[in-house]
Picture 1 (tube, rainbow, N blue to C red):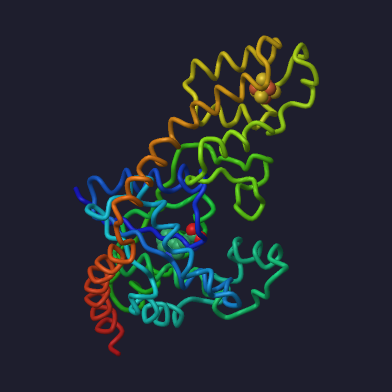
Picture 2: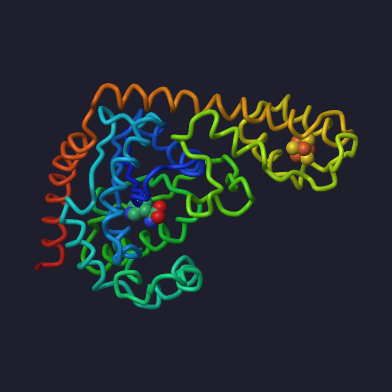
Length: 326
Ligand code: TRP
Ligand code: SF4
Protein backbone atom coordinates (compact mmCIF):
# COMPACT_ATOMS: atom_id res chain seq x y z
CA UNK A 1 0.00 0.00 0.00
CA UNK A 2 1.19 3.51 -0.78
CA UNK A 3 2.16 5.39 2.34
CA UNK A 4 2.65 9.06 3.01
CA UNK A 5 6.32 9.85 3.53
CA UNK A 6 7.59 13.17 4.79
CA UNK A 7 11.01 14.51 5.63
CA UNK A 8 12.88 17.79 5.67
CA UNK A 9 16.42 19.09 5.76
CA UNK A 10 17.69 22.43 6.95
CA UNK A 11 19.35 24.31 4.09
CA UNK A 12 23.00 24.14 5.02
CA UNK A 13 24.43 24.17 1.49
CA UNK A 14 26.39 21.32 0.00
CA UNK A 15 25.65 17.91 1.46
CA UNK A 16 28.12 15.25 2.58
CA UNK A 17 28.25 11.47 2.78
CA UNK A 18 26.60 11.54 6.21
CA UNK A 19 23.49 13.13 4.71
CA UNK A 20 23.55 10.68 1.85
CA UNK A 21 23.94 7.46 3.84
CA UNK A 22 21.85 8.56 6.80
CA UNK A 23 18.90 10.09 5.01
CA UNK A 24 18.99 10.48 1.22
CA UNK A 25 19.36 6.76 0.54
CA UNK A 26 16.04 6.24 2.30
CA UNK A 27 14.38 9.22 0.65
CA UNK A 28 15.30 7.70 -2.67
CA UNK A 29 14.11 4.24 -1.74
CA UNK A 30 10.81 5.44 -0.29
CA UNK A 31 9.92 7.71 -3.21
CA UNK A 32 9.48 4.65 -5.45
CA UNK A 33 6.35 3.08 -4.02
CA UNK A 34 4.91 5.83 -1.87
CA UNK A 35 3.68 9.38 -1.88
CA UNK A 36 6.70 11.34 -0.69
CA UNK A 37 7.09 14.95 0.43
CA UNK A 38 10.60 16.27 0.94
CA UNK A 39 11.10 19.86 1.92
CA UNK A 40 13.62 22.59 2.65
CA UNK A 41 13.26 23.43 6.36
CA UNK A 42 14.18 27.11 6.09
CA UNK A 43 12.20 28.16 9.17
CA UNK A 44 14.09 25.56 11.16
CA UNK A 45 17.33 27.06 9.87
CA UNK A 46 16.12 30.42 11.09
CA UNK A 47 15.95 29.14 14.68
CA UNK A 48 19.76 29.14 14.76
CA UNK A 49 20.74 31.42 11.83
CA UNK A 50 18.51 34.37 12.62
CA UNK A 51 21.51 36.70 12.71
CA UNK A 52 22.86 35.75 9.28
CA UNK A 53 19.81 34.92 7.24
CA UNK A 54 21.49 35.37 3.84
CA UNK A 55 23.06 31.95 4.05
CA UNK A 56 19.66 30.27 4.34
CA UNK A 57 18.32 31.28 0.95
CA UNK A 58 21.70 30.94 -0.72
CA UNK A 59 22.04 27.37 0.51
CA UNK A 60 18.80 26.13 -0.98
CA UNK A 61 20.00 25.63 -4.56
CA UNK A 62 23.19 23.80 -3.56
CA UNK A 63 21.25 21.49 -1.29
CA UNK A 64 18.43 20.70 -3.69
CA UNK A 65 20.88 20.05 -6.55
CA UNK A 66 22.52 17.50 -4.24
CA UNK A 67 19.11 15.90 -3.63
CA UNK A 68 18.54 15.58 -7.38
CA UNK A 69 22.08 14.32 -7.99
CA UNK A 70 21.54 11.69 -5.30
CA UNK A 71 18.50 10.44 -7.18
CA UNK A 72 15.59 12.26 -5.61
CA UNK A 73 13.13 12.54 -8.48
CA UNK A 74 10.69 15.47 -8.61
CA UNK A 75 8.54 13.31 -10.88
CA UNK A 76 8.01 10.91 -7.99
CA UNK A 77 8.36 13.04 -4.87
CA UNK A 78 6.97 16.47 -4.06
CA UNK A 79 9.76 18.91 -3.23
CA UNK A 80 8.93 22.19 -1.55
CA UNK A 81 10.07 25.04 0.69
CA UNK A 82 8.61 25.07 4.20
CA UNK A 83 8.20 28.83 4.54
CA UNK A 84 6.29 28.96 1.24
CA UNK A 85 3.55 26.86 2.83
CA UNK A 86 2.37 29.25 5.56
CA UNK A 87 0.01 26.64 6.99
CA UNK A 88 3.06 25.11 8.72
CA UNK A 89 3.29 28.26 10.84
CA UNK A 90 -0.39 28.16 11.61
CA UNK A 91 -0.29 24.56 12.73
CA UNK A 92 2.85 25.28 14.74
CA UNK A 93 0.89 27.93 16.61
CA UNK A 94 -2.03 25.59 17.26
CA UNK A 95 0.23 22.81 18.49
CA UNK A 96 2.19 25.20 20.69
CA UNK A 97 -1.00 25.76 22.70
CA UNK A 98 -1.21 22.13 23.75
CA UNK A 99 2.48 21.25 24.11
CA UNK A 100 3.63 21.23 27.74
CA UNK A 101 6.80 23.22 28.31
CA UNK A 102 8.33 20.33 30.22
CA UNK A 103 8.27 18.14 27.07
CA UNK A 104 10.38 20.73 25.27
CA UNK A 105 12.73 21.51 28.12
CA UNK A 106 13.73 17.89 28.58
CA UNK A 107 14.38 17.33 24.87
CA UNK A 108 17.99 16.03 24.71
CA UNK A 109 18.82 17.81 21.42
CA UNK A 110 17.72 21.10 22.92
CA UNK A 111 19.86 20.71 26.03
CA UNK A 112 22.86 19.58 24.02
CA UNK A 113 22.65 22.47 21.55
CA UNK A 114 22.27 25.05 24.30
CA UNK A 115 25.45 23.71 25.84
CA UNK A 116 27.45 23.35 22.60
CA UNK A 117 26.43 26.34 20.51
CA UNK A 118 28.46 28.98 22.27
CA UNK A 119 28.77 31.31 19.28
CA UNK A 120 25.05 32.12 19.13
CA UNK A 121 22.38 32.84 21.68
CA UNK A 122 19.81 30.08 21.46
CA UNK A 123 17.80 31.14 24.48
CA UNK A 124 14.87 32.00 22.29
CA UNK A 125 11.23 31.07 22.16
CA UNK A 126 11.63 29.83 18.58
CA UNK A 127 14.50 27.52 19.37
CA UNK A 128 12.69 25.91 22.28
CA UNK A 129 9.76 25.36 19.93
CA UNK A 130 11.89 23.73 17.21
CA UNK A 131 10.28 20.30 17.73
CA UNK A 132 6.78 21.78 17.74
CA UNK A 133 7.43 23.21 14.28
CA UNK A 134 8.78 19.84 13.24
CA UNK A 135 5.64 18.16 14.56
CA UNK A 136 3.57 20.59 12.48
CA UNK A 137 5.59 19.67 9.36
CA UNK A 138 4.98 16.00 9.90
CA UNK A 139 1.39 15.95 11.13
CA UNK A 140 0.22 18.30 8.38
CA UNK A 141 0.67 15.53 5.79
CA UNK A 142 -0.46 12.57 7.92
CA UNK A 143 2.96 11.08 7.32
CA UNK A 144 3.21 7.39 8.21
CA UNK A 145 7.00 7.24 7.87
CA UNK A 146 9.60 9.92 8.46
CA UNK A 147 13.05 9.00 7.08
CA UNK A 148 15.59 10.81 9.27
CA UNK A 149 18.99 10.34 10.88
CA UNK A 150 19.13 8.67 14.28
CA UNK A 151 19.75 12.03 16.00
CA UNK A 152 16.17 13.01 15.09
CA UNK A 153 14.49 10.18 16.98
CA UNK A 154 13.71 12.30 20.09
CA UNK A 155 12.02 14.85 17.83
CA UNK A 156 9.94 12.14 16.24
CA UNK A 157 8.91 10.88 19.65
CA UNK A 158 7.73 14.39 20.54
CA UNK A 159 5.75 14.62 17.30
CA UNK A 160 3.99 11.40 18.23
CA UNK A 161 3.18 12.67 21.72
CA UNK A 162 1.86 15.96 20.38
CA UNK A 163 -0.31 14.14 17.82
CA UNK A 164 -1.74 11.86 20.50
CA UNK A 165 -2.47 14.81 22.75
CA UNK A 166 -4.28 16.70 19.98
CA UNK A 167 -6.28 13.62 18.99
CA UNK A 168 -7.23 13.09 22.64
CA UNK A 169 -8.21 16.73 23.33
CA UNK A 170 -10.25 17.32 20.14
CA UNK A 171 -10.67 14.35 17.83
CA UNK A 172 -8.68 11.96 15.67
CA UNK A 173 -7.23 14.40 13.19
CA UNK A 174 -3.61 13.26 12.95
CA UNK A 175 -1.93 10.00 11.95
CA UNK A 176 0.81 8.88 14.35
CA UNK A 177 4.14 9.02 12.47
CA UNK A 178 7.04 6.64 12.73
CA UNK A 179 10.76 7.28 12.26
CA UNK A 180 12.45 5.36 9.44
CA UNK A 181 16.20 4.83 9.92
CA UNK A 182 19.01 3.37 7.81
CA UNK A 183 20.88 0.28 8.82
CA UNK A 184 24.22 1.72 7.65
CA UNK A 185 26.41 2.51 10.65
CA UNK A 186 26.87 6.23 11.14
CA UNK A 187 29.83 7.52 9.15
CA UNK A 188 32.31 9.71 11.09
CA UNK A 189 34.28 12.60 9.64
CA UNK A 190 37.73 11.90 8.23
CA UNK A 191 39.18 13.05 11.58
CA UNK A 192 36.74 10.81 13.57
CA UNK A 193 34.69 13.74 14.89
CA UNK A 194 31.06 14.08 13.77
CA UNK A 195 31.04 14.64 9.99
CA UNK A 196 30.38 18.33 9.44
CA UNK A 197 31.31 20.91 6.84
CA UNK A 198 32.33 23.33 9.58
CA UNK A 199 34.96 20.90 10.90
CA UNK A 200 36.44 20.46 7.42
CA UNK A 201 36.24 16.69 7.88
CA UNK A 202 33.39 16.00 5.47
CA UNK A 203 33.42 14.27 2.12
CA UNK A 204 31.01 16.28 0.02
CA UNK A 205 28.74 14.78 -2.62
CA UNK A 206 30.06 17.51 -4.92
CA UNK A 207 33.77 16.82 -4.32
CA UNK A 208 35.81 15.79 -7.36
CA UNK A 209 37.51 12.40 -7.30
CA UNK A 210 40.82 14.16 -6.65
CA UNK A 211 39.33 16.08 -3.72
CA UNK A 212 37.97 12.87 -2.23
CA UNK A 213 41.36 11.17 -2.43
CA UNK A 214 43.04 14.25 -0.93
CA UNK A 215 40.76 13.83 2.09
CA UNK A 216 41.12 10.06 2.36
CA UNK A 217 44.89 9.87 1.92
CA UNK A 218 45.90 11.69 5.13
CA UNK A 219 43.30 9.93 7.34
CA UNK A 220 44.78 8.86 10.66
CA UNK A 221 45.17 5.08 10.96
CA UNK A 222 46.16 2.83 13.85
CA UNK A 223 49.19 4.66 15.33
CA UNK A 224 50.74 1.27 16.11
CA UNK A 225 51.41 0.89 12.38
CA UNK A 226 54.37 3.21 12.33
CA UNK A 227 56.19 1.10 9.78
CA UNK A 228 54.77 -1.03 6.99
CA UNK A 229 55.90 -4.14 8.88
CA UNK A 230 54.06 -3.22 12.10
CA UNK A 231 50.79 -5.11 12.57
CA UNK A 232 47.68 -3.04 13.39
CA UNK A 233 44.22 -3.26 14.88
CA UNK A 234 41.57 -2.38 12.29
CA UNK A 235 38.88 -1.97 14.94
CA UNK A 236 40.40 1.32 16.08
CA UNK A 237 40.92 2.63 12.54
CA UNK A 238 38.42 4.95 10.85
CA UNK A 239 39.51 3.73 7.40
CA UNK A 240 38.33 0.27 8.42
CA UNK A 241 35.00 1.72 9.59
CA UNK A 242 34.66 3.24 6.11
CA UNK A 243 35.52 -0.13 4.52
CA UNK A 244 32.63 -1.67 6.41
CA UNK A 245 30.33 0.89 4.83
CA UNK A 246 31.65 0.90 1.26
CA UNK A 247 33.42 -2.41 0.63
CA UNK A 248 32.14 -5.92 0.03
CA UNK A 249 32.39 -8.37 2.89
CA UNK A 250 35.25 -10.20 1.18
CA UNK A 251 37.36 -7.04 1.01
CA UNK A 252 36.54 -6.20 4.63
CA UNK A 253 37.84 -9.63 5.65
CA UNK A 254 40.96 -9.24 3.53
CA UNK A 255 41.66 -5.86 5.14
CA UNK A 256 41.03 -7.20 8.62
CA UNK A 257 43.56 -10.00 8.20
CA UNK A 258 46.00 -7.92 6.16
CA UNK A 259 46.07 -5.19 8.80
CA UNK A 260 46.55 -7.57 11.74
CA UNK A 261 49.38 -9.44 9.99
CA UNK A 262 50.99 -6.40 8.36
CA UNK A 263 50.21 -8.07 5.05
CA UNK A 264 48.92 -4.80 3.57
CA UNK A 265 50.01 -1.19 3.84
CA UNK A 266 47.77 1.66 4.96
CA UNK A 267 48.00 3.52 1.66
CA UNK A 268 47.02 0.38 -0.22
CA UNK A 269 44.15 -0.12 2.22
CA UNK A 270 42.96 3.46 1.75
CA UNK A 271 43.16 3.12 -2.02
CA UNK A 272 40.80 0.11 -1.99
CA UNK A 273 38.41 1.90 0.30
CA UNK A 274 38.53 5.02 -1.86
CA UNK A 275 37.77 3.02 -4.98
CA UNK A 276 34.70 1.53 -3.36
CA UNK A 277 33.59 4.89 -2.01
CA UNK A 278 33.91 6.20 -5.55
CA UNK A 279 31.39 3.58 -6.69
CA UNK A 280 28.86 5.58 -4.69
CA UNK A 281 30.17 9.06 -5.44
CA UNK A 282 30.95 8.84 -9.15
CA UNK A 283 27.33 8.26 -10.27
CA UNK A 284 26.18 11.17 -8.09
CA UNK A 285 28.84 13.37 -9.66
CA UNK A 286 27.76 12.32 -13.13
CA UNK A 287 24.12 12.98 -12.38
CA UNK A 288 24.96 16.45 -11.04
CA UNK A 289 26.79 17.24 -14.25
CA UNK A 290 23.75 16.16 -16.28
CA UNK A 291 21.44 18.25 -14.11
CA UNK A 292 23.58 21.35 -14.33
CA UNK A 293 24.06 20.98 -18.08
CA UNK A 294 20.37 20.45 -18.71
CA UNK A 295 19.72 23.84 -17.12
CA UNK A 296 16.90 22.52 -14.97
CA UNK A 297 15.40 25.15 -12.68
CA UNK A 298 15.57 24.14 -9.03
CA UNK A 299 13.30 27.03 -8.09
CA UNK A 300 10.80 25.89 -10.71
CA UNK A 301 10.72 22.38 -9.27
CA UNK A 302 10.26 23.77 -5.77
CA UNK A 303 7.47 26.11 -6.90
CA UNK A 304 5.57 23.23 -8.46
CA UNK A 305 5.94 21.11 -5.34
CA UNK A 306 5.00 24.00 -3.09
CA UNK A 307 1.68 24.41 -4.91
CA UNK A 308 0.88 20.74 -4.32
CA UNK A 309 1.93 20.90 -0.67
CA UNK A 310 -0.18 24.00 -0.06
CA UNK A 311 -3.28 22.30 -1.29
CA UNK A 312 -2.89 19.39 1.13
CA UNK A 313 -1.92 21.72 3.97
CA UNK A 314 -4.94 23.93 3.29
CA UNK A 315 -7.28 20.96 3.55
CA UNK A 316 -5.63 19.71 6.71
CA UNK A 317 -5.88 23.11 8.37
CA UNK A 318 -9.62 23.23 7.68
CA UNK A 319 -9.88 19.92 9.51
CA UNK A 320 -7.78 21.25 12.39
CA UNK A 321 -9.77 24.45 12.76
CA UNK A 322 -12.96 22.48 12.65
CA UNK A 323 -11.76 20.08 15.37
CA UNK A 324 -10.61 22.93 17.61
CA UNK A 325 -13.75 24.93 16.73
CA UNK A 326 -11.86 28.08 15.96
N1 TRP B 1 15.10 18.70 12.32
C1 TRP B 1 15.44 18.07 11.07
C2 TRP B 1 16.98 18.03 10.95
O1 TRP B 1 17.65 18.82 11.55
C3 TRP B 1 14.87 18.78 9.89
C4 TRP B 1 13.39 18.72 9.88
C5 TRP B 1 12.53 19.78 10.04
C6 TRP B 1 12.59 17.58 9.65
N2 TRP B 1 11.24 19.36 9.95
C7 TRP B 1 11.25 18.01 9.71
C8 TRP B 1 12.87 16.22 9.43
C9 TRP B 1 10.18 17.12 9.57
C10 TRP B 1 11.83 15.35 9.27
C11 TRP B 1 10.49 15.78 9.34
O2 TRP B 1 17.49 17.21 10.24
FE1 SF4 C 1 43.66 1.19 9.07
FE2 SF4 C 1 43.85 -0.23 6.86
FE3 SF4 C 1 46.04 0.82 7.98
FE4 SF4 C 1 44.78 -1.18 9.13
S1 SF4 C 1 45.79 -1.25 7.15
S2 SF4 C 1 45.52 0.65 10.16
S3 SF4 C 1 42.64 -0.76 8.63
S4 SF4 C 1 44.34 1.93 7.08
